[in-house]
Image (cartoon, rainbow over all chains, first blue to last red; front, side, top):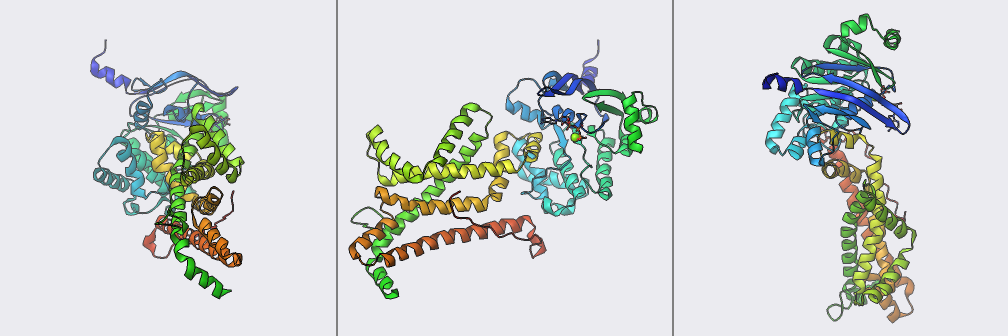
Length: 255
Length: 252
Ligand SMILES: Nc1ncnc2c1ncn2[C@@H]1O[C@H](COP(=O)(O)OP(=O)(O)OP(=O)(O)O)[C@@H](O)[C@H]1O
Ligand SMILES: [Mg+2]
């Protein structure tokens, strides 16, 4: 018997059980079993087309699944529920996209403050102040009044991270956040992600940045053809991958 | 020639401006402007609702609206006007004023055309914006209202304005069901003068051109202002090149 406190500790996780998804006949995710503990940083890697984006998008139900379940703090994300409830649940899972997807018709500070105002009903001035603090945190306080079109890719992605953080999500998902960036801008985005990780944010990141994975990840999930073939701490994964396909993947990366 | 035109305007300006009013119904240019303004003001929200219905995930909403839009777009406007003019009183027994018949028909017809423009604008945005909105917890209606439509409508300003211009020009068809508008007044003038059709209808053409041109001009100014604001006015000169809005004023 565990104490109530320990029980809460235990349920503060993301759990994927027997998750299957297919597009028509084509199975993209096959019987995915995985768990993320609170405060853990997981890096998902694998070859192109292996289902990384699909997997991470199912976690906030941007994609539906065919069977299985995904829970956040014990709550099934893919259960039948009212759309209001789903929207609330989604707002607790931050998502950062490869292509930033900032709202180009809104200024930077509006991008960050609009969702707390519209979704959570936060007062406009409170949301505005909070947005400025978050922008300061990602190093963009001076760009608050700019529009996304005036920013570099790295700056846009940092705004996108601030926008997600504005909803105060306990979990953040990243889908190749640096893949669309020029090489010289990758570092500034990774630095923000590193500082988030060090503050104890629960994070799942799809990324090809193996340096980041080595430094920041608690565990690596290696995924190929819709299956998680290996999960291991980074030292282990990079030094002695067990699965032959993981070995080949790493060899190709070093190439 | 110029003298004739000036003489016509001097003799008939009041008829051309307000029709038989106050001895009869309001007509002339005033009525044309009212009919145009009401048609546009009603067709625009109708078109947004039609577009949203066509993009809806509910078939019961999507299919009938899609059918309505297809049929409306595939039938000449004149046909629709005559149908509503003759059939609606027959079916309902109500005596519908021709102005109302014309307004309703124009709203449905232009609403259908405009809904295709709006829908194209929404689809052209791609799924990324909707994904981002949903990931932040916005409802689909909230996302539409605050994120998707402001962008889609802005991107479609040129096409939307060209539909507005068509709407204004299409009010002239009210003539066939005796809507007392500017065209109607002009033909009354022509019937009285008998010998100067070119001069009379030249005046008519100039007035319609002026109305449509003003609308296009105002729309261009509005569009440029939004573009400049988004490009960041702080730098003084707009850094982004301003693409002049091309207005194609034929029917789609
Ligand atoms: N909407 C869709 N319809 C059909 N097939 C799809 C769809 N979306 C993705 N797929 C397929 O599912 C597979 C997994 O796609 P996914 O985007 O998850 O891969 P990924 O691992 O993220 O690849 P990448 O590294 O290129 O981003 C791919 O083979 C892709 O072609
Ligand atoms: Mg991907």
